Image (tube, rainbow, N blue to C red):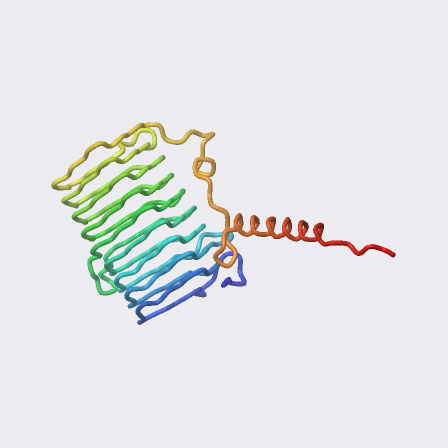
Length: 268
């Protein structure tokens, strides 16, 4: 477990890697770090099954810059600033992550200040985001946002092209796209906040919308992100707490059973 001494985060970095290929960051617990995981100039690398959190004020993020062929999967991120933030990187797979209470959820963009490169071939799928701002791309090409479950989280795409937004479920959120082209929005279920359209397009070209279901319901005062989506249990050394509890209970039962079966010596 990597954690800072302060409950509100400080200037430390949990894990920082630069200039490698085929690198794996697996099963770490990182708490209260100003930057949780930072990767720069990596290729063909994996971030998987990490538990990242901040107690108190929001801090931390997974930050990736100038990297290619990166997979980010099955991580749990709680109370992070920019939960997953990616600059100037290509060929990205972001899947099966659980993000809760982030200022932003997933950001993939070109940042000219740091030697801008257009993100290409970006797939964001099977993620759960609760109260986490938005999924966003800027100046990206060939983007697939599919099969995600969002609560109080939007999809916001800007200056991007060749976009597929498919089979997402969005509660208390919307899809907003500006200055983009070659867009397919299909088979999504959207409950926008009251008074907001489910899909907002501005200065977009070649857009196809089919089979979307939109209901202006939103979340009532009694229904919050906490009870709409149940958060998974925390991990210890990358292992879920419910699994550890089950193993412990089974072990105790086996020990008791074996103890009772042990033959007793007869007294003479």
